[in-house]
Image (tube, rainbow, N blue to C red; front, side):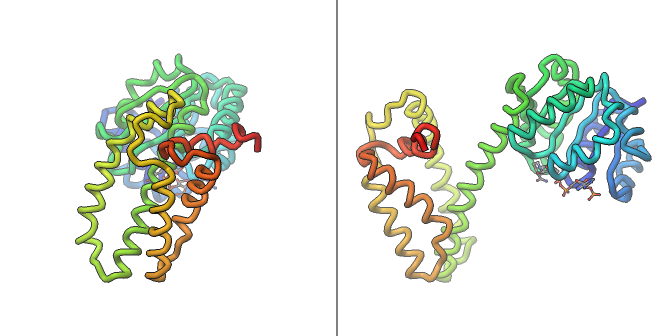
Length: 291
Ligand code: FVH
């Protein structure tokens, strides 16, 4: 018997197994392509010959595979072995997928915890690796010491869908920022400005804009988008036209920036020109628009 089984040894699964080993846990691993287990075996991991053997080897099973369908595909044939064990699924997915996976695992007699990894593999094991968890509180309390080997844990609640909801929302914020950064680099690059020259200004600008976010949270939670507005939507919508025109003149695609303009126009048309940008959140929530 080992303490923890890690199923899936891609870039992330390997980092997870290494972190558990580094903390002195006995770790069993399994991967579809056995070659990926060789380096871990050399550092003390036990390599299971089958998924069933891997599951039966530990009370705590950590799965980190490509997508949820893979998890079901891999664990499905060995589902009976999950009974009495805790399954921690760190595969990226949607809240709905997590809730369905939770129902499936519980119906096999397992305890289920879903997780969202807010880190890249080299960060795993360090304090800046944030891992979000949701699902069985009892199971989480029982294994939180072991999971602590991976980074900083945050338990969000018993609804298994919460960890992926937070995960996906954080990734959404990240990709929105990346989209803006890509556009800015395309625009400056088209003018021959080296990325290395422009990037420090961009990084510093984005950092100072982050300072707005606490006020945004207050506005959204209170529903008051019109008090003490310093940069109203109407002004921003007019300035945003220049952003589109400058890209077009430089022969830079506008595919990343047009959707934001369309939302701003919708806000102005809805009479929100004097409100802050935060008033757009409600327009994105289509069920609140009766759409
Ligand atoms: N790497 C990252 O930066 C991110 C950070 C945040 C979390 N994500 C999510 O973590 C999951 C795994 O990601 P990964 O980086 O380990 O991904 P890969 O290196 O591509 O490894 C994929 C593993 O899945 C196995 N696999 C794929 N398809 C199958 C299948 N049909 N049957 C069995 N196993 C399968 C694959 O096995 P193999 O190709 O080595 O045989 C790897 O073990 C993911 O949800 C990220 O979104 C990572």
